Every structure is written in C-alpha cells, then in structure tokens.
Length: 338
Ligand code: PHE
Image 1 (cartoon, rainbow, N blue to C red):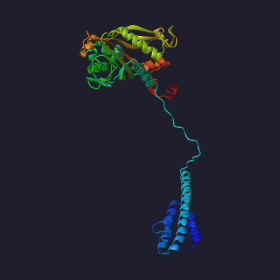
Image 2 (image 1 turned 60 degrees about the horizontal axis):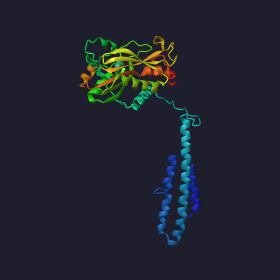
Image 3 (image 1 turned 135 degrees about the horizontal axis):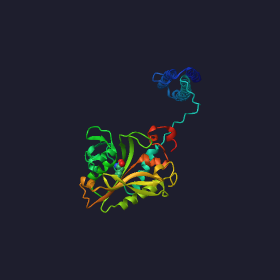
Image 4 (image 1 turned 90 degrees about the vertical axis):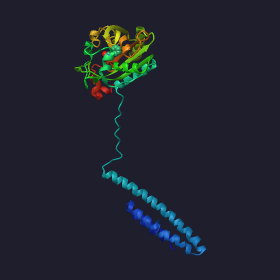
C-alpha cells in the first residue's frame, strides 16, 4: 500500500474543499464510518500479525496527519466565512466602537436618597403609602372634615368623590399610626399631586417627604433639634434656621422652617427675594390632639411632631435651581450638570 500517495491524495481533497460543507464531505469520505481510511484500518484484521503491526502503525500515523490537515483547513475556512460575512454586511471591525451612552442618577432621586440617609442616621424608619388615597386619609383624619375651608389649600384630582390623588404625604402619617403603636419615628417619601397652575415653583406632580415622631413627652424643642440637624446634614452647618408661625389643620402649633439664603448668606438677594435673606424649606408642627384621637392614640399620654418637605424644593435650594419644571423636562443639558 502506498501510504505517501494516499496522504498526498487526501491532502489535495482537503485543500480543494471550498467551504465548510465540502470539507465535512471530505472528512466523511476519509474518516467516516464507511470512509476510505476507516475501511483500510478495518481490513487490517485479515492480515498476518507481522504485516498488521507494520501497516497498522503507518495507517494510524496517516490518520493523525489527516486529522491535523482537516482541523487547519477548517480554521481557515471559518475565518474566510467570517470575513466574507462582515464584508457582505458592510461591517468594518477595525473601526473604533461607539461608546454606549452612560446614564446617571437623576438629581431629584439623589436628593431624596440623601435626605432618606440623613433621617436613617437619626434613627428614623422609612414607610410608604398609596399615591391614590381615600378622602378620609388625605383630609378627614387630618382634622379636615368635609367643607373644612382649609381643604382649599390642597386642591387635587378626583378619581371618585371619595377617592383622589393624594395632595401630600401626610395621609401616610395616619396609616402609620393606625398600624403601629407609639413610639413612632418614621419618614414617608412619595409622589403627590395638586391641581395647580404650573410655574417656576409649582408642579402638579412632585415629591414629598413626610416626617413623624410620636412618643411620650415629645415637644416642639425635639422638632427644632431634629430639623436643625437635618439642615446641617443636607445644606451644611453654616446655614442658619428660623421657625415662622404658620397654619396647618393637622398640627398645632404649626410653623414654616426657613434657612438662610445660600447665595447671599442672609443679607437679601434675587434668589431669596421677598424672603429677605431667608428661604422657606418645609411645613411642620406638633401633631394636633384631634389627629391623635382619630387614630386612637391618647393625646394626654402621647405627643408628637410632624413635618413635610418638597424634595424638589430642597434640591432647588441646595443647587440653586431656578425652575421646578426642569426636574421633569429630561433635558440632558440640565441633568448632566449634577
Ligand atoms: N402636608 C403639608 C403640606 O403638604 C406639610 C406638613 C406636613 C405640614 C406635616 C405640617 C406637618 O403642605
């Protein structure tokens, strides 16, 4: 048997295979079950021992070499097919890639999480409530029965006569007190809605964070202490705070927390305008005894304080953002600054 001739013949067949399918046909014809070489190897059994040993070694060597050739040719053909495929589709793999556009966290979300972190460090829990709320929780339980004139402060969108989009996160105070007995120390973040004309400081949907503390002996001094710490943590300890009397039906006494203007430092400028050096941050007060009674807490045994802040407002004051609508416009020129 002429092994070199056989090798040469096989080599030619392998080289002539023009694509992977043809190469596979060659492989089957040589090494398949009914292949040429397989047949030869099988016929060895009929030979006398001496000859079988000799020829067997040669044929096995031949098979190994053929396998190497097949593998090499397969690699070449695969590469060719890839290149041709790329060329057909007009893809130039040597061009530099287009870097994917990396997003970043929205400045409002960052502010919310910063505020949440501050209160978590002060020992507060985070509690959430529904955005679609009953009239009872949004108004009535907060000491605003039907026809109460203070309801005008919070006009909203009604789903039914008794169901509405909550106008503040204060209803979560009620849900929180209904569910857990005091002591309570929680903040309640979430979206709220108001039926309101849009301008640079008003939006119909915005983000609030409510705070509630109820325990034995909680006083207005505790409220001032916590909010002073909050201002120092979020705006820096150089900001001064001031509490101005205000009115909310669910707190008594009620106040508005003001901080000194970060732009002029308190002397009065365009940013603080009519505030004369002061900027309003949030509403707050001692929880009204009637609110405690509404949830079955004895106001003689327990007292508390609450506050509610607009997250957009905090971000605006922190970063001197002039228009609240910027938060919702998704203009990259605005968002990329933070
Ligand atoms: N809920 C009030 C508002 O949206 C804010 C507030 C909360 C005031 C808690 C006092 C206590 O205007």
